[in-house]
Picture (spheres, rainbow, N blue to C red):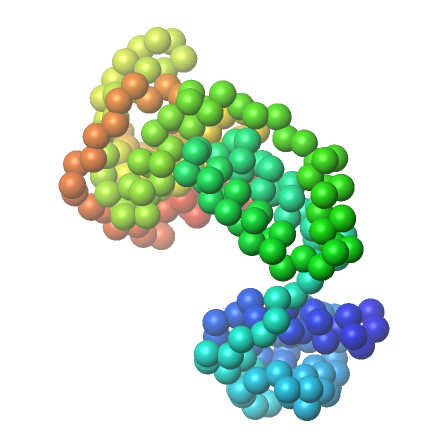
Length: 226
């Protein structure tokens, strides 16, 4: 990695952080020495980049500072386009609309050469659509309940066509490659339960809230899969 590439990566790292990051942390991420980081920080400051902080404490961009948008390389563009395509095809309508908006913002900051690469990526990275009405039914309501940590009542029909009603704590939505599932804490079973969204027959907010903990959380449930 030459110095220009390293400075760009360092600037990207600083832009992505809201809190100070130490030279040791930056050195670890860029696979260079702390001494190199200190020299690069000085080079950025001399070029006019508004960095605050000091050795041993950490560095961050000064509050309220703005920088020109950073450009993407070809692989980064492909990754972004593929990610957006997946959300457009597999997410609910709200997420799909947000993905469209994000894609417009990406297009807006690209120079001519990268507009060309962007167009090539859009034409060659295709993600087939799912039947959104079934696969993402109630997804927007569930995402809101997860954010607000609000208990919900669901009417559910399992793979054997057996129906049940549950009061659950919605913890997160997980896409397994074919279907979306809702990871939750079930009050009836006093344990984790996973429900396929397309098998939820009805949903109602209770108005009651819950608190996650070390023992009841999406992170705890997903630990064996990571």
